[in-house]
Image 1 (cartoon, rainbow, N blue to C red):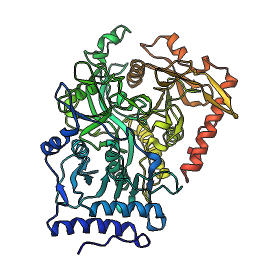
Image 2: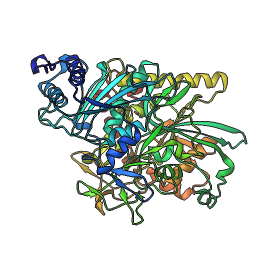
Image 3: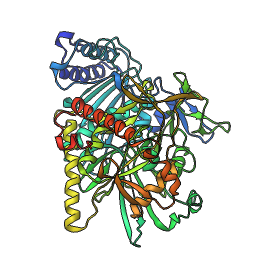
Image 4: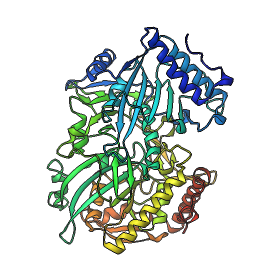
Length: 594
């Protein structure tokens, strides 16, 4: 007899999970196809070709039905008492879909190369969308399909039901159960929902192992310091999607761009060696290392050119798997495409699943920084008070910067957020779990900083230096007061929302700053308002004094203006802490005050 789907009044988290598995077993017992068990790469690709496109370089691509994640349609439920009627309707609808003649695809994979953080994920997907399991499994390490997984997820991209979020209006697409290690999704076929659906649980797992799961890219390299010694750098780059995280965590110096630096009097190839990209997105930060999650990379390729060699090289590989990516006149993937549009605007979220192996010689087979990392770079694009780059000296201020997760909305985050100042605590909207609240993550990170400084004082080991950079924001943007709030002014140019006035650092300028900071070549002075907590660059070899002056917000506004605008920032940051990071220690929460 077929399993009975629980009525709404009997629906619980465990009842849903048990019934889901019971349906699969019942289907198998009557000879009905319940699921395809870990089909081969070749099988999934062949099935996906029917609705995909092949580029001239032999790579394949697909389009999703939604071109960004759906955070406003995502909810987290920790226990049965939190289940609403909408949640229960969502779960019942999922079970009804699975009970019907709708075979699934089962794929298994492991996040983490190091045993310290390895995590077995089992994802069940609608068999009508084989490109999704195809691409996801290329991001992870092989898993034993017969072993018990650490988490599961059910993705029904072809399913829609009238369930809503607790507000009773917003559609419900994603429901996470952290304490049951299970996620359910409907409607969206965006690859990011698969990826983050599993990584969200991995982040929780990492915290329980003593680390902090961070939304950051990682790389390591050696630089020749100003005193002539070689220094090994382990760098983490935090940032929200579309802010430049991949650009700078995957930036490499080589023959392809050496001439640009030579024109600035910089012999970069004499200063950098052994450059290895580690991971692009979510990593496990421990006091003594930073361990990667994925063997591949799902990277935003909008505006990528050959100057970003590692990304370009892997993205143009014949075995790359593309999403929402245009085709150029030569038939190849076009990362500068302006043809594709989404919601009335040019596409700004082309994506590619690429292999780190295709980034060689800038990948050495390891996704881990196996020594204490010594550079933490936070990307907070801004328009009103930000310098291009600063160094954060105060651990409280650094922890508060991570906690605030200040950024500017990008289409890859959600279409309705474009250009808006946002605060996404820890730059990480994927933190879940009763035993790992946001404040817990920040306190652990802060303790790492403090412990590393103590060891530096005792042994000379590098501390974890912290930097804040402004990538896609602007210095000195025009602003206006609206209902007592200063807001940057935007205009629409070529279909895209752009800030009016000011100037922003070029990618190459930020690469120069980070390189010279690692070499110890940058000269600083205290911030005019925050003093010794934050240092601002006054001399960066390779960047003219005149350009540094342009990237100084105090040269665009009066000190009185800067005080008012910075007070506004402090108030907003503290409001975020009050509303979204309960329990944050006061010495961190109030560290932005001046």
